Image 1 (cartoon, one colour):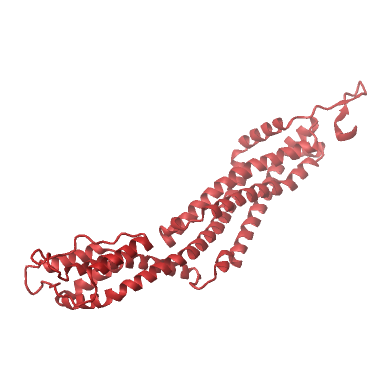
Image 2: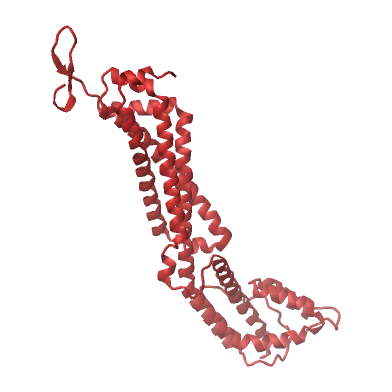
Length: 366
């Protein structure tokens, strides 16, 4: 055989050495695709291993990244909301204390609606005020006049504007009870609008408190430094390593099974003059196709599970603080890792197939 193994005996009669026609890469790709179609379900076994491993890798990696983004992103927002809430409470606390006395005969309903107000539902509290003012029975009627608090109409407007500018929220200022007979006078009726401001802000406070509780359930403390939040915990790192090992071992095992099942096919190709490099190329191409397809599906499944998990834990804050660039980078890394592992996992089976003697391969019974 001449250099580069490109020459073989032309025939026993001639005794000449002629050039072997080497198949192009396109032919290797065509044969690989046909082989995958022929062994579709066996190929699906390999692909399913890749899908599961990459889905797990993508989920763990992106979920950790989203959690860090929520924990870091909410800090300045929570501080801003807390500051505004504290400024409103200077006027709200004495005002609410006065209201609780005026709703003395409806204490149970008042406490229930106040809880809804603090959850951000101003409509229920507003309706209670309207029904209290217009109650047909004098014993149930609530008098909102002459509520002795220092807050003025101008101050309520100032607080409402503060909420609009700093929190980008719209306070509920319309529809609160007023007395038609005294509306033209400087009465204290407008002070009920303070509840509309308080309810909207308190709803945001409650939302951020729930976010903080969700993070604490995941062992993320409020005072954790941003650098520590961005870094992956040892547990997450180990989970990623395990998923990569499972993926690599699974691919290698599946490809070894594929080689074992195709001994006679490999022997036939070698008898027809296929070079070792061509055999290696076939198996690596098959593994690459399976790896890319499985990796893409695994990434999609991992992202879907991550979004569902994030929504369950953090609600719409998952999208509000969603780290688009970071997640795209993780997707790119996962695509490269999955494809690379597929190729690496197929190297040993491909070399084993290429180094088989044709006679030995043909001797194997199917």
